[in-house]
Length: 199
Image (cartoon, rainbow, N blue to C red; front, top):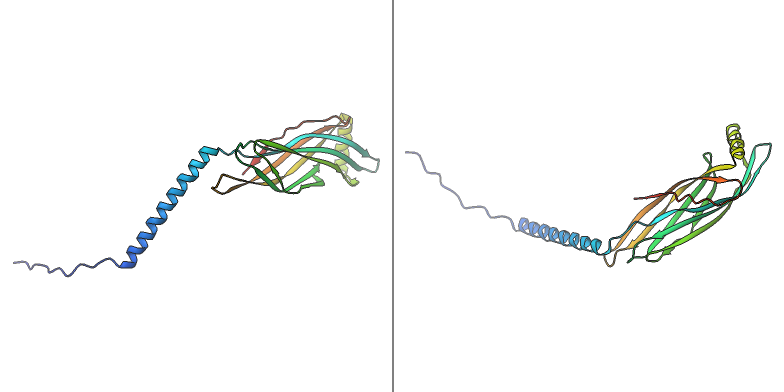
């Protein structure tokens, strides 16, 4: 006859394991509840990304001599928009660079500022470059631009944005500008409305 196996006393789960499982369950419930609260807050407020773009630009002065030295003065209006109806937006670390054929000719910065709910604010810059010695290729491109009576400039840079979603905390994004501006030499105003990206 086969022998019957004798079973020993069952091992009980360690108390520390039960405590750890209990803590993990509580944390999981807290995370789920926090997620639901954030989702409900998002649906209630429906935050929209702020915008920063070139609203208007004008070439005020062009000085170019036979030695290939260029000096320019521009007026650039950058506009910050907040389409959120329930939250103010703060803009800070705003740093833009004005370029001409790949050469940085001016830096545009702004102190931290706030845009109220569903409002906008303009940043007005009058940019005057130092005399810029151009290379041979840039001299040819400049002469062609002067003949066509329109000079190309690029405005690149970014700004940090932050706004609060009720009592749920703040949301932060980078807003980037990459704008090509073809400015007439007859000093007329151009409205590029270059699009901005956020992340």
